[in-house]
Length: 130
Ligand code: HEC
Image (cartoon, rainbow, N blue to C red; front, side, top):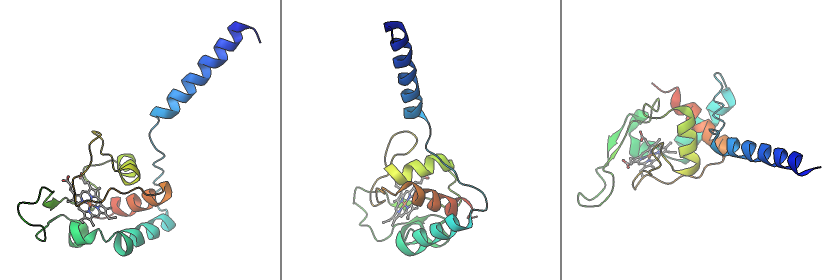
């Protein structure tokens, strides 16, 4: 391979790498994915106990169990339907803890590091809640 061809190949690889780095996470929240929906329901209702903070129906709740002067978030927002996040943003959040503006939720919201498929399941379940 001459130098010119080598440089073309190298440049091509770099472009592909950069594209992969900025590509949004696979948000494949396929409508009607019953298995993901069931797993999501299980993770949210039986494992994460999201309801303990986000309230019944996950419609948002004040966290009365926190001392008033504690430097924490004293309200857990509505997550039924995930009104503030796209599916892709929510999957990233459940995998990394990062919100779209690159900030993190305050305590006591746990910083989840879910496996991709579990994050997709949780988001599939939350998105269809009304
Ligand atoms: C111990 C309490 C607690 C538990 C348990 C909890 N959360 Fe939260 N969550 C919060 C609080 C408080 C916030 C808001 C943090 C802030 O305002 O900085 C939050 C924020 C969020 C957000 C960001 C919402 C937005 O609109 O910005 C999502 C999404 C979320 N939680 C999902 C979940 C899911 C899914 C579960 C269960 C798997 C869960 N949470 C369990 C307390 C909790």
